[in-house]
Image (cartoon, rainbow, N blue to C red; front, side, top):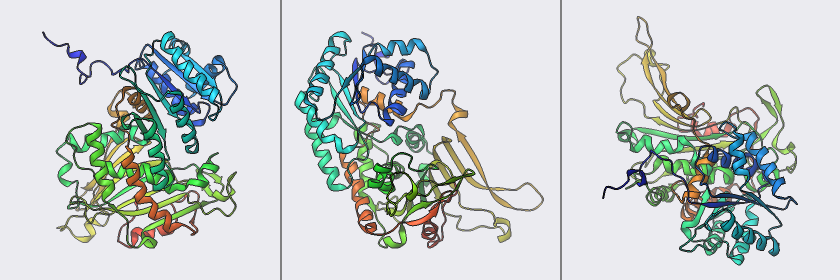
Length: 505
């Protein structure tokens, strides 16, 4: 008997579509759900990637009915959808929308939620499969997880799967992270827990693995013999918006450094996995995170800052302490930069400079490999005055793509070598637009593909790097920088002390 090739999971001619299932979102009226999750659900439906038997179930304190919730979902999806709006797609999706009102500590509300989920098995044929998205403050995780355990909603059986999606931050330090991980793992099995870091859903982050492991061009120079340093930057031009309460308790290091930037470092420094599978990729990332070393002199190589009022894009920007809800004497950092090492044979001696900040000149996330200069240049000094280090830059956002920077002769009658750049842009090379990160990650959750989701060991290894930084910074005042600048002066001095400077994105 000849097997049907279209039933081979490796075949790409038909898209992967999940089994019949429900998506249950706690905190459905919050910013994340309205701006990211609901538009992602519509875009997946519009692309034909949701199963025919699919239900969206919202849970929040608002006293709404199904129609009120459907109108909120419609408005949110229409406002932020990536794909063109098609009324027939929404009408089909809207018929599968349900809402349950209640507080997280109300037993009756969770009993009703469990009953509604049971009803959907019969009316919508979801087969008992459900993914639960905790779009709520981390402080609420314990009570929600215990309610799910009490009602049996978290129980997987041979006939159905139940999965949970946990948003960052995964704790506030190593101890709280272990407590949270222990709680989650006591309610759901390890393979059913999806800790979501939306940066790992971005096309350019995934392309980093394709760049390295699908080509022979880069791997021979992807090591300390050729690479002088690595710079990983996540800059934002906005302030904290309405997140003062969250940000005052978190700060830039816990908000970004602990997850996004250390995950990008791990993907940059990891060895080639045995196969492209979730377990093997996470194994290699974990090796890197456990090999990360902090500088001995934290005072010189770990900098934190806080933005003051300044000018950004021609408009005056208020200082952090003048933001609504922020303590007038706050010592929370809005900028963090640190020099890390990776103690492996490939990367020994190569500094990894990580930085993140708010109210910087532009929004950009990039990974830059800065290569060593040629050991000998047969040109006159004046011929290479404008020649810098070769660089390979992976732009994660907003202009997704890559830049290769190298030296070239300037046209003319004399020998003059100057830096030039070759650019690859996703938007120009491919006709299909890149899906939003949440689009890809939500689909992976429903499919049960955990490749792009960190496990608890990765989270704990990341906190083991951040905790000593937070302990060192405790009780100190962040260094000021004006809105519209690239951070405090000490961050520039950190690199200048070793004869380097930050790359200007």
